[in-house]
Amino acid sequence: MAKEQGRKMIAQNKKARHDYTIEDTFEAGLVLTGTEVKSLRQGRASLVDGFVDIERDEAWLLGVHIPEYSQGTWTNHAARRKRKLLLHREEIDKIDRRVSERGLTVVPLALYFSDGRAKVEIGLAKGRKSWDKRHAIAERQANREAEQAVGRRMKGMSD
Image (cartoon, rainbow, N blue to C red; front, side, top):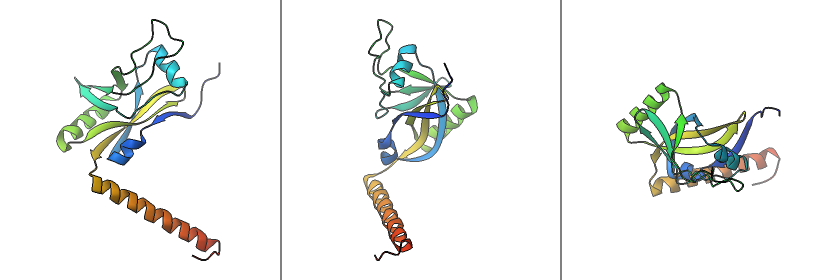
């Protein structure tokens, strides 16, 4: 069987980018069981309630839902079990330091296969207030309208 190449997206946490301001991102490997990998290959996962916790110098992914594999038997996994993240020691220390000093939280942003290996993109995030969210939406809308106006102008159309 040929080795997989490239990046295959499984799940994204769009709500996290709406609810938080992402300050920094990291790519981490995941320690998974066989039925979890098979379930992910079917494209089934949810990152909505997920978060990262650091215990005894190890990073753990909690609250991520990977449903049981449909053809799995007694070897099936628990859907919301605690999963270990594979990060370098310096990255774990940096994340832990910034979370404790600045009151940030760590949320999963995307789950994907990179060259056949399951990876999760995690982000150091600061919570947004509701007025921040409205401001960000208004800013995106204004940028979109400006780009459309420039595009129309380039095509010679009137505003």
